[in-house]
Image 1 (cartoon, rainbow, N blue to C red):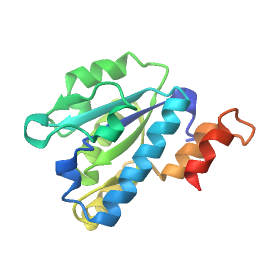
Image 2 (tube, helix red, strand yellow):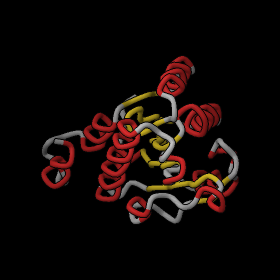
Image 3 (cartoon, rainbow, N blue to C red):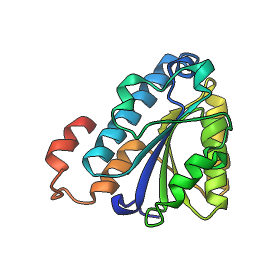
Image 4 (spheres, rainbow, N blue to C red):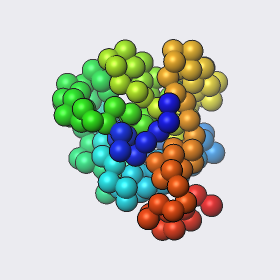
Length: 181
């Protein structure tokens, strides 16, 4: 499946400092950087940007630097975002955009369950491996393998970005590409 900007929306899952603080620094920094770059590109390309947080009362809001890129985040307690009725209702209004680019934490819990449920419901989830993270990398790698086995696309952030553009002649290429160098 080719990732197309006109068919995409991006969902950033639970990028909260309390959750991110438990993730090893290298993986955490990589995920934050790639989520930020994807959200900035999505904003410039007018791709809808949704976000969730897991139990905000206990774990706090999503990172402040990401909030400006997204619609107001939805507070949830379920692990699969698809099982959160307000988010599911929002997604169902986006019938022309069936590719859901998934980023966030944790890969083996909320990202995995969301991707599996979306796939079962007929959507085309794309899990961005280097824009997701888990406390234990072995858990993340196991989840990515399981997703691939289920027929779900796993990509890297830079691939998603360049597929969105599709051409170096894209009007946004010169302004957006430097963030990926």
